[in-house]
Length: 240
Image (cartoon, one colour):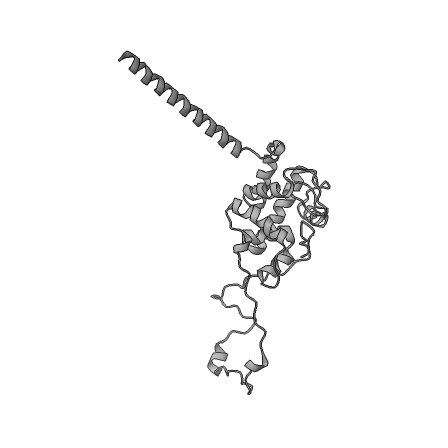
């Protein structure tokens, strides 16, 4: 009887030890997942937080783009000439540093992170969609505009780029973002044989209509039309 009780206590102690070991392993795994991916990434935490606050975008966007673009290498240079952690093209850097006073060194960690965050914010303001924002960051807004309008597809590299980032920051891949359908070209067969007169506006309605210079109090302002800007260039140097 005494031997049976001793065996039961031994088994209970072994079970408790195994549970403690599993808990410790889970804690270590969680800590490793939460830690920055590269050894030098801890040095980037301050600039990332500052850039997130300054440009009003989530830190996760900056971290994930940085990882995919440069794997945390502040001296990275692509075959197209993109520079630094956020892989900013020279022309884009010149525009952004003039606008935001980022200094003269595109490889400076803080300045490069700020430039990438500023460009992400510009793409977000342009599209209001995470997937198109990423497509514009990678391939240039001209190419993203054409894709959104249904005029042109995205490069395979850009599709893979968006797929590598979007799910990690809470969006689906660009493959699920259907471009707008193209408008059919009108055919002469659809035209009427007789020209129609424009509908006549009654005199009473014409008199009640405000003149062009008058202000209509209840009419909301028209949203601004987004035109492709020559200031935006693709960070990766690809075709727009």
